[in-house]
Image 1: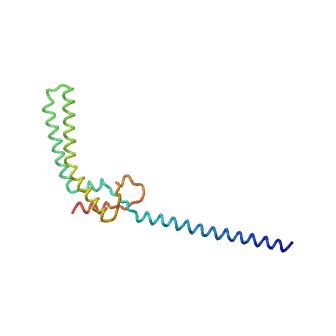
Image 2: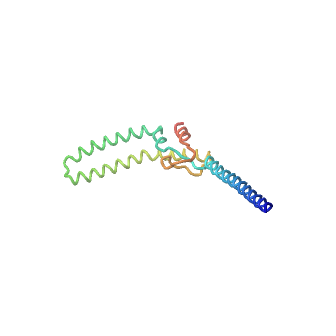
Image 3: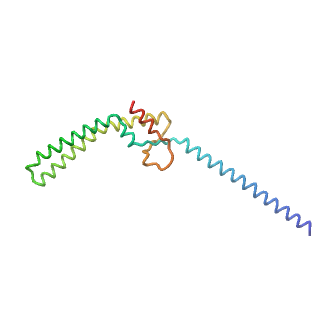
Length: 156
């Protein structure tokens, strides 16, 4: 009977050793897999850019803002002089036209700046091998920040 118990103890010991070895291998495999994910995130081909920061640092923005302010002042003076003899309905319609004209002027002034920024972003993304560039406000985690590079390119 003692021999039988020794055999059982040996089998149990081997089983425990196998479980231990299997556990170590499983941990090693899982750690290797998570390292692969971490290295994939660090070598991501997704870029991020703080579009508001780039826009605020664009050299043409100050001139566009100055011109837009002149247009607003002109529209305000024009509205006050022309709407003096109008009834409320005519004033509302003229105000709507004035607002539309100001929106079109703003678009006309900002569109070339946006185009230059987007060209700079594309150029930097191509140089860095990035396939996607997202606005920083839409990204929670990850991505390669290229904001400084874009600012540098547009302020040259």
